[in-house]
Image (cartoon, rainbow, N blue to C red; front, side, top):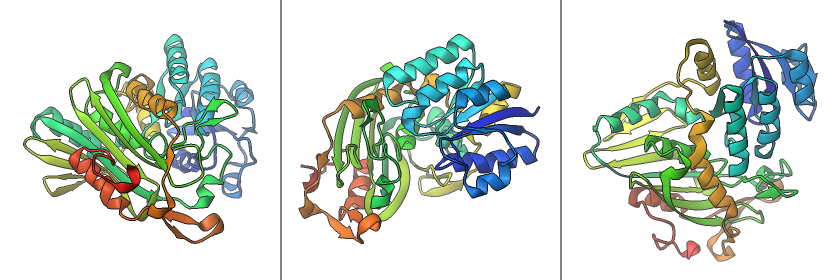
Length: 370
């Protein structure tokens, strides 16, 4: 059947949903009945969907269009108020990741969805990768033996303009409202959520211990270079070491260390490498999966109820002492103005070593982390 949909947030990552909705409309799967944004639509979106209802107020748009579902792809701190409006309008919800910027907000959305008996999918796209599903199957069947630990690493580079794009960029709080726009909780949130899902440790109480090393190379509130080490109820050690200050970017990788085998999940590429043998897979998007769930009862890739452990990590990170500014003696600069990039020489090797040894930066003896 054709489902009616409203999209809140058309720029940034929301532009990805604009393109996907256009493709699904061409197939007859959905019909876009409204767009919402605080800014006017850009020229590309106007050319494609300029004939559809547009409103800067999502509640007004929902009341006028009565869609089956709505997608919220706005900044993190808007997820609760916009998600609340969607569910209160008796619409199913696709909420971009991370689902909320605090535990209290996550619980409120979850409670409202349950009270309304509505579906709430969270847009952790990595969980729709068949490479992820294949790895989960290998772990479940014992192909890799007992899992000794799961290490994740990623190294991207962001210029000064990245933190100038919005008033919430790189912030922990904005006007007293949690934002949590740090490397662990936003750009590399997929690594955290996917590792927890692979361990079947997605509940709030599934984490028994958390340790973080939060660092930064810029004058921002949040972390841009960070290491997380936690232990789950299965006694699995999970480490996530990431940076936005790389000189040579590395796409994120999740390494599963088993007693009988090793696997690497390159989740942005849908690539799984098992004992050195690559496997290329496809993926199903969160929106496609939500449609299949509503039409045929397919399990949701990431029900908001399964985000408890991730939200506990986010809460821990945002409540931890302010990220420490790395000394200039360990940094290198390239470019100036909005194009300035700051690098930590050797950070690429450090994040990879963390995933291999399941160690923190300080545990590895990295001088800039001590």
